Amino acid sequence: MKNTDAELAAQPIGYWAGAAHRVIIGYIRGEMSALGLTQPQFWLLRNLSAGDLSTDGQGLTLAELTDRMRAYLHDDDDLESAAADLLDRGLVTRDAGQRLWITEAGRRGHARIKEQGPAIRARIHDGIDDADYVTTLKVLRRMIDNVGGDPRAS
Image (cartoon, rainbow, N blue to C red; front, side, top):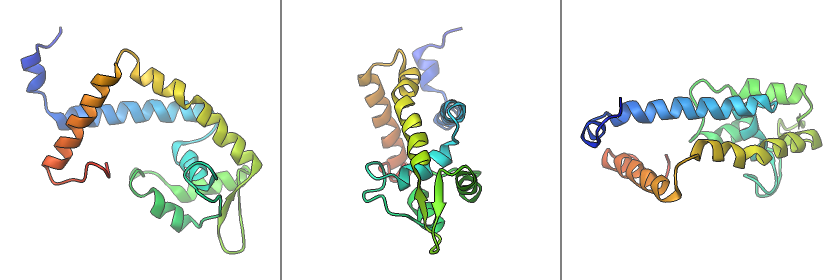
């Protein structure tokens, strides 16, 4: 049964925003996992990759990485385990100062996921034109602002 616009307008945003978050993040994480990395592992590699989130490609400690990623980490993301697995697989190394550095194998893994990003995004955005997407983001950002949050940090 299709809801009327009036019925949709009465729906609770908290429920739908949460449902969208769970389903979309689950989809993204599943796609990444099929490519051999968890989303937190990919974030670690992004933060260590020159030309991506790292401006200089320098190594970072786990504490520095955690601080950089704080805004988008989930409560159940375990960066210590994610980093340990990357170390075991040779995708990063650790120096005497406890800084993690991306390896050539890590760069290849990072590139593999990045190459699939447009296809993952296309699947999520299928049937949604850019104007509707922009309107949705503006509405969500306004709602965040309305309740005292910072829409730029969300």
